[in-house]
Length: 363
Ligand code: UDP
Image (tube, rainbow, N blue to C red; front, top):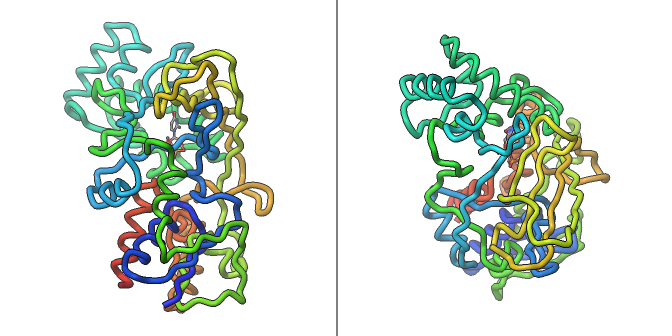
C-alpha cells in the first residue's frame, strides 16, 4: 500500500509513524519548508522559540501520552498564565487567588463562601454558566469576569463576543473555584526537551517514511490511501465556499536582558490590540542573557496571505463543514483528520488521539 499524507504537523506525523510501524510505506508532504506544522520551534540565542505561538502539551489520555513519549523526554513544565486586570497581574483562569487579588478582603470572602456553597472546591464553572446564577453576588462576580477577562479578549481573538461564539470556546478557560493557579490540571503536562520540532523529527525518523518539504499536493500524485490534514474545503476546490478561520500575527522582540515577565504567558484582555505576550525561555528553563517574547495579534484568515490557526465554531460553519464531510464520505481511500481536516479546535493531544483512532479504524 502506498500511503500519501498531506501535512507534516503533529496529526500527519503521528499518522505517518503509526503506518510505518505497521510496515506500511509512507510519503508525507508539506508545502512549508519545515516539518511540525504550527508546533514548529527553533533555537536562537539558546532559547527554544515557538514560531507559531506558545504551545503546551497537556493530556489525561495515557495512550496519547505514551505514544508521544516514545519520541521525546519531557520537561515537567506546569503552565501558568497571568492577566493584566485593573492594573494588576493576576492568575488566569479566574480562581480564588484572583478573587482575593482584585477585590477588597470582605467582599472577596463573601463571594468565596458563595462560590464554595454553590459549586464546591476545585470545581470549574464556565463563565456563561456562572452568569446564569440567580444570586446577586455571583451575578456581580460573573459580570466582572465577563467584562474584564472575556469580552474584549474574545472580541480581539474572534471578532465576536463570548455570547456569539460557541460556548465551548470560552468554556476552555472556566472560572476555577480553587487555589490552583495552573492553566491546565491534566495528569500529563510538559514541553518536549529539545523542542517540538525535534519530537516530530524523531516521529518521522523511520525507514518507511519519506518526507518531502516545499511540496504542495497536486491531483497527479499517486497513492492507494490519502491522509489529508489540510483544510477539507481546499481538497474539494472550495466548491461550496471557504470555511472561515482565524489567523494570528506574531511580533517577536528580543530584549537585551534576562527576564521580561514572571510567567510564560501574560494576557491583556482589556489593554492594547494584542491578546497576549509569550516569553519562550520559561518553557524549558533556557538560560540566556537575552529573552525572546512574542506579541500575539489575532486576525482573519485570508487565503494566500496568512495561515489557518483556529476553526470558528458556529452553526453556519458547522453546516458548511457537513457539506464537505458528505463529499469526503464518498471517497473511501481519502481520510480527513487534524484541526483543519476535521475543522475542529483540537489541542495537540486531541489531534494525536484522532490520528490513533483513525489508524485503528483503518488497520
Ligand atoms: N479567553 C478570554 N480571555 C482570556 C483567556 C481566554 O476571553 O484571558 C477566551 C477567548 O475567547 C479564547 C478562549 O477563551 O479564545 C480560549 O482560550 P485558550 O487560552 O484556550 O485559547 P488558545 O490558547 O487555544 O488560543
